[in-house]
Length: 174
Ligand code: IMP
Image 1 (tube, helix red, strand yellow):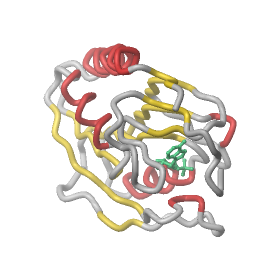
Image 2 (image 1 turned 30 degrees about the horizontal axis):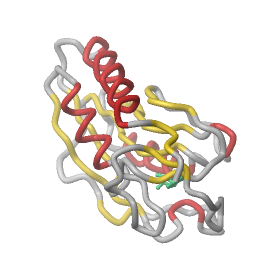
Image 3 (image 1 turned 135 degrees about the vertical axis):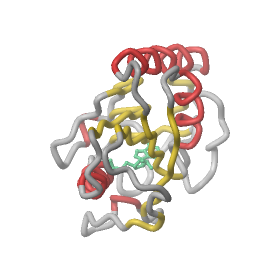
């Protein structure tokens, strides 16, 4: 599979975003909320590039078909463990694609009344957007191609690949 972004390119972008977040939240504490499982590796790297005080939490949404189920419905299967009211929160996602997952999670997290809420994504596929939502931080914008690696899967495989690669076929629903 062809490499789209090497581990060095990814590390460079993650460092840059970590630095930006550290500057923007200088003197504050933040809560990073990772969306399982795809964002786990990005969150691990991002957290280590952020110099301000930070804690993590994780949510999981329905994995089969994710937002690509015909209704566009997204179901929460794991909620946050700790309250986020009054906290500065950043949702950390692997890919912002149609936007259905992140708009759902954004609304859900806003109900907890955080002091602020932003979105960090490793990849952004703006061409596929079905709902208007933008990331505050994105490592790379990519065209409408299916990718694997750096936490991202095809049918649960390839999450451990340490660079981001183009999957040769377009899976159903993409
Ligand atoms: P959406 O923005 O609600 O469409 O959902 C985004 C989710 O779809 C991501 O978090 C991934 O789990 C999955 N996804 C979208 N595009 C890809 C891809 O190219 N490779 C792997 N997973 C993808």
